Length: 583
Image (cartoon, rainbow, N blue to C red; front, side, top):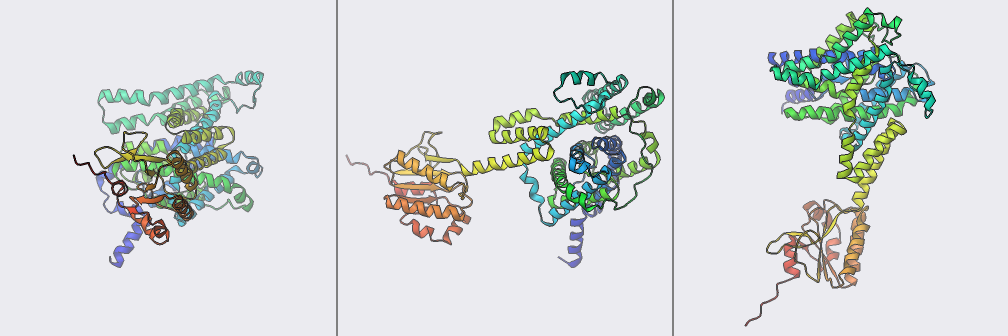
């Protein structure tokens, strides 16, 4: 490879946009233009809604939807991921800002910018340490339990907004709740429920109707995804026309500054950085895991490849851009990404177009955002969030694997009872405990030969041949310090049950490694068996395992035990057929 080709390859690796721009054509641009317009329609209401959900001024959600997607488009490996404010990150931000140690510091906007900056720095540090594979260490059940729990928290926080109420503080006082619900604002409730109904109508009912009419899929996507913008538009017009803010006391967004955000670094108090660091770590972790998971969904549809470590760089830079441009932390949004994908986006040009449209809206149409009722925004959040509550998945996981089911349920309950950070930490710990328990109690099968074949199967599952002086054991896990004692106990129990055993063959088909502690215990086991006039053998060991064993004295100590290529070879050697009598 020439130096120029090598440099070009490095450039594409760092800036994936260079790779797809070289072959970019007009047809792809037309698709991206359409998808960008549709995605921009979602960015405005979602940006405002998620900022309010996080307890921040609406402009922080809008600003987070302009520069961060541009940086991700330059550096990200997903061609359709839509980066910006997301619901799960918003509730985590709200949780962080409402903790006593953070709220006492004041200036929540500055704290949100620090969360963006710290999240971005943490992701870039993870990228530098090549920790892109970290996404594999949070199991799907834990992520599902966390998402369901966080979604329930979001629903609980938005229902009062739908009714025109403040967050309740009644605990278990029934009389208090009676007084609390008497404060419902009828006009707010009407707008909220009407907004929910309109958004639901623009979902499956409208899509089914448009399909029956025979419209093209792209047009169906365009029309159905206009629901949030139309809802906001109608609700805002109603508030302004009937002066519902003054007469009915309907809560609205309020003044949103016009113009693009100024780039600044006004988030530097050191004490805040220390206090917010743990919260930033969790936000960075969840934002990364969720974003990569979403990116892989759409990439798999088109046979594209997502580079996890490069995603850390792209998302980290996007969050730093959010901090510098006055935005809240960002991640890949599932609903926006699926809309972007369904609308026909071919590359990140669609998100560049969407960001440009949003920038124009912020510059020229910010005064229009002032009368947006919070009840309509709550409706948008509720309709988007309800599908994330997957209680049926928990039941399915529980039936399939009790350990994963416990971790998933504990994560959900932990999020609801103790908080977001505590809940996901509990889930990760329980997942690791479950994994260690499974590793320390591997499946071990006493096997025999299926008559007329050379296949060996579990004696508890199949009708097989066995031999009174031969014990065949298949260990279905690598042998480590965590499980060697369990394996030894299993072997001793079988020998007590079958006192006539003279030969033990350990079948290594499922063993990929034997660590140093396990090797020492195997050597002790071998010496004990030899004293008891029994011989230990090995069959079907993998090459890497044999290579490690050859570096030790174990194979010499095993003698007169043998290492057999096939289990059938061991049986023929140790159980030769009886000669037939001559009549």
